[in-house]
Image (cartoon, rainbow, N blue to C red; front, top):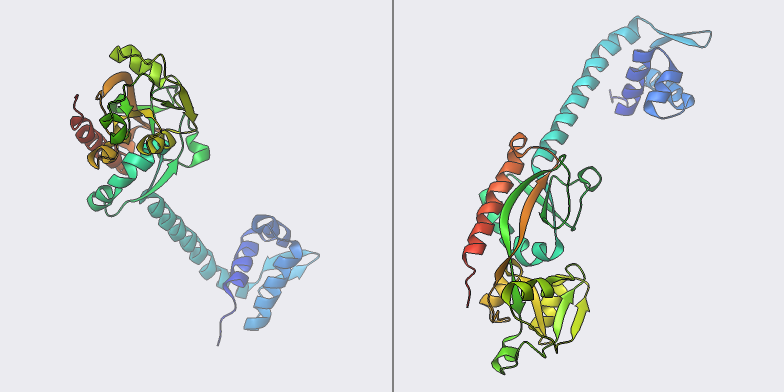
Length: 294
């Protein structure tokens, strides 16, 4: 004998629980008629009536009670198992929101190491900056620079200091062009970066024109293409410096800001969040250690 579709058993079980096709329809988000048809098809398929129908009311008969004693616990166990599988899947997935340039230039190249260290964790990366709504974004964690306010509902851990400095193509510096007079590439996301660096370094470039780009990664690409000098985070250009696509003639200085890992709940409450915190802190510490002044 071929069993009827599982949907029919499900509709029957909800109708048996509620003793009402109308209430079952509300729980199942279908019409009363849909419930009635599924139950009738089930009865026709097995050749046995399961309800007594009297004056628009329904009552389980002996056959219906016998079947419900089986399907009731079955669907409860099925729901419980599916919930556990979904929960375990969520626990094995870590969603991290990260500022776009740091994500592109620093974090993504290092993710193979994270996956090798934590093979059971799947990391999903969201590119975003500034304040974050964890509930709306679905992120577990966020990598941010502390250039905006967050309240006590956010748990923050400082992972490294920010180091900044000008970078340009080697051809620019090899020609001996001074900083003053060289086009200065500026990002809209950090409009005061040049002013901050000049204040910290004591350098100036009064004759230079400023060219504005939407994001830091565009400034970095423009600098590597010889279009001028860009202020950059040391973390953003390590690969370009090693590959001699860029040079940092003045080195890098601390600007007083920090990169932080943000969480909507204490890190100790989540093993996967703690694992990422420990990993990214070690990685950033290693990166900062590689920074040296000229």
